[in-house]
Amino acid sequence: MEEDKQTQLRQLPGVDRLLEYGAEGRHFDHIPKSVLIPAIRAAIDDLRAMVLTSQTPLDSDRFSRDSLVAEVKKRAGRTLAPKLKRTVNATGVVVHTNLGRSLLSPVVMERLTSISGRYSNLEFDLEKGRRGSRYSAVEGILCELSGAGAAMVVNNNAAAVLLCLDTLAAGREVIVSRGELVEIGGSFRIPDVMAKSGAILKEVGATNRTHPRDYENAIGEKTGLLLKAHTSNYRIVGFTAAVSLPDLVSMGRRHNLPVMEDLGSGTLVDLSKYGLIKEPTVQESLAAGVDVVTFSGDKLLGGPQAGIILGARQHIDRIKANALTRALRIDKLTLAALESTLQLYRDENQAVLQIPTLRMLTLPLAVIQARAAELKSRLERNFDGRLSAVLLDLSSKAGGGSLPLLELPSRCVGVTVDGVSVNTVELWMRNNTPPIIGRIENDQFIIDPRTLQEEELDIIEKAFTDMLADSAARR
Image (cartoon, rainbow, N blue to C red; front, side):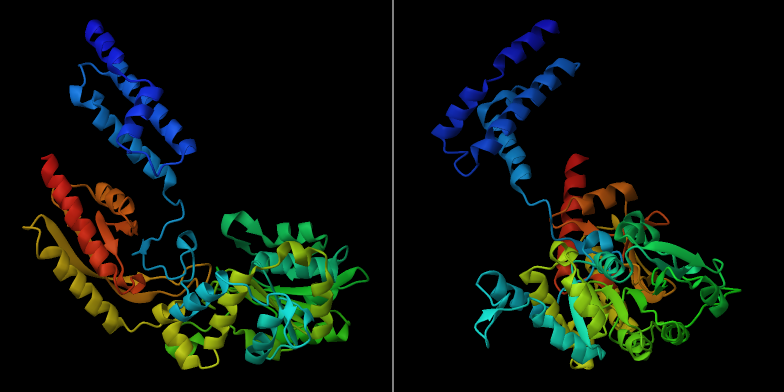
């Protein structure tokens, strides 16, 4: 046995020999040397390890130059492949943070292509012929849609909150209800953001009940701001009480204190008109008289990642002048995507139809049922009974820290494969090109058609065809 191992170890080529063979056959012409050399070394090292650990001699084909070249090319291909990949979202979670949150409208994608490959007037005033402000691309339309006096945009809502607190309340107390000390994804919390801003947190009330007197009793000489944080990713129910935004605004006026609201997900559309749970709109917050409101661009708005800041011009101008603004500013691609998304909101009916997030949230159940029936038929028709697909009445989610109590009725497809565990099915789908991300429930691989796009039924059908063919070949 030891002699066999030594014989096979001697068959291993050196890096230089494999490079020479690859050059003769032009096998590696399109692989950068910085990728090629590590791939060759890894292929040789792994084969050496297999020889040393195997209980029996390896197949001689593994040592052929063609086999080693193929292994090197496969490894190099994995290195060169983009790490950020398009995926198929079969989870039914519309604003899926781990899968990139909101999809952009095709109209927006066309605009991105136009702007990204050419020069633009990002910070050039075409009318005056001199340097301008990048925020001019979106400030006008944001004010038009929301009723705000002024607007600006940074790279996400956490940045927006940080910037506003640093500008309006650094070194001073910010009063907020204990029940609104929100934590968002990745363990980022309102108190942590506030500490970084230099503002001093002063929490009032109890977790479930906060009254106007709690704020009144906390206001003093050190108070700089009254903050209301919308609990967009959770709800406190039961024996509860909260101070309304209009009441907080009135209190702020009496004490000459600015009032800010962090809306979190934020929406420009009254979703209750479409049968969803009522969520406060940006327009309603501004109409209540709040001085500054912030919200995300890539959640219920359905645009790119951004933190949108709206409010009275006197406060927005101060925020724009803050030195942090430059560190948190958005680029031309975000501006182009946001402007194009906002333009769709000038016609609400078109916005609901053309913005994927709104379209999926309001998708009629009958449409989902038809998709599920078609997918079930496709999956079952060619697999000789090895695959079972059943229709299940389950629920979709809004996701992205939005509408936490909303259960969207959906018709899903539950898949099982004879002789293949559900974990193996999930792994195969996840390793597909493109990856298909579903969920496992009751020992079934669940596919929710609500979040599938037009051509993705074909992708799913082919993935199962390939999986079953591979499974049959291994038997």
